[in-house]
Amino acid sequence: MVYLINPPLTKATEPHSGLAKLCGSLKANGYIAKVLDFNLEAQLDLISRNMDVKEKKVSQALSRVRKNLGTLRSLEIYNHPQKYERLVKEINRVLSLTKEDVFLSLQNIEYPGLASHRSEDLKRVYENPKLDFFYDFYSRILPPLIERDKPLAMGISMVYLNQALSVFGLLGFLNQYYPGIKIIVGGSLVECWEPLPGFDKLKAHCTQVSWVSGAGEEPLLRILDYRDKNILQGSPDYSDVRELPYFAPGFILPYSLSVGCFYKKCRFCPECLNPQSYWTQSFANARIELEQLVEKNKPALIHFIDNALSLAHLRGLAEYDLCVPWYGYSRFLPQLTDLDFVKALAKNRCAMLQLGLESGSQSVLDRLGKGIKLEQAATILENLKKAGILSFVYLLFGTPFDGEKEAEETLKLVKELAPYIDFLNLSIFYLPHEFVHDFQVEHNQFSEGDLSLYTDFKHPENWGRRAVRDFLTKRFKKEPEIKSILSRRPPYFTSNHGAFFNTRLFSVSGAKLGYGK
Image (cartoon, rainbow, N blue to C red; front, side, top):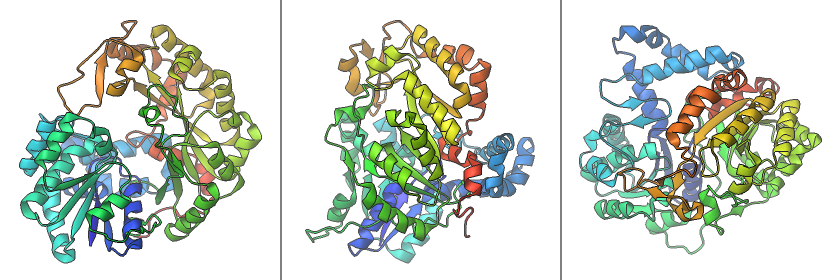
């Protein structure tokens, strides 16, 4: 038996696609494997335990939490955005109730005096796993499972920075009580940390851990002493998690048609530094596997987790109906200016597209290498609205090319396009270490953390992060048209729930809503 663990804490709306791939690969090659979604189960456990808390200020939220969770898992609440917002915030209040001095929400956790980007703090939690907020959960849940299944190995995913302290608490717990079990840790955060000296310190400290950077199927099998030269490709296996009560109105099936980015020209994105990292499959081949996964799992929604859907894949989705609503990222491709093409996507149940506009200044877009023409972007957003596809638009402020003048251009454009934008995500630029020389700006240490992926920099126009925040708070968000868009953004779950607000599409879909258990 091999356990594959998704640790807390991140948004618990859908299963971990990478672990499903690993599970399918292990089973195809003769191993018994089980996916454990501790991210979801720990949050449910915490909510259940907090229901016994005597706290007058949140007594109503406590009394309604079971009903609220049930309502969140039904589609009806997504017809009523204001009620949805109140309900989610009440659930979050119950989850966050704790006497310990931690900041906890449905999407994040922060520890007092501990930082995920400091190797010394991670080593400290490893040596004393009781410092981990989820130690009590692990110590109650894992022993009976291990006693029953006697796993020979555990694969642990570490994708997000807010999972890191919990991962090292779990590693410390396993090292203390189950030193004979092989431990393998992988995920995108491991890949990001690989070049950093601070990560070398962690690897030297956690000697019983095998670390995997990049695709994990073959390395995991080799660590498990798999001898056969031929490794069989297995289909993603969601059998352990498809009936779990995720925070969504039905099972969301995550699926990747590609790995990496086909564009690789955005100057602020690490993908442009790795020209050999793109892998894709034909839609014809993917369609066969998707049909099988849909038949097995009866999803309410398909989430394409690609960096961006390629034109070939969008054409496939426009030609073939998967019979399940779907959403994912897309670039502002010129072909989306064709209303008939967009209508074909809508007809085949495209519920939402996520689009990285980044700026309303053409000069900024050109200097960032985005390959976007603002006139085309405006037409695309209008086409999506006409076709009934929701748009989730991403903006990025404070790049070295983006001053207050350019930010005002973005404000003006967003106001003009407000009738066609359903959701907005606003981000402030952080300079990755790899881009210091490319952007040619003065830089200095961003934080004391030796695992930080970013560095501080002096903005050419002295428009630093504090000034950007002031602009967003006092200027951008105050505009009525923009304020209206921002008010629609789902709290905590953001784009993970965005597609469900296309309720008309789900009402005519044959997708399975709700959970079987």
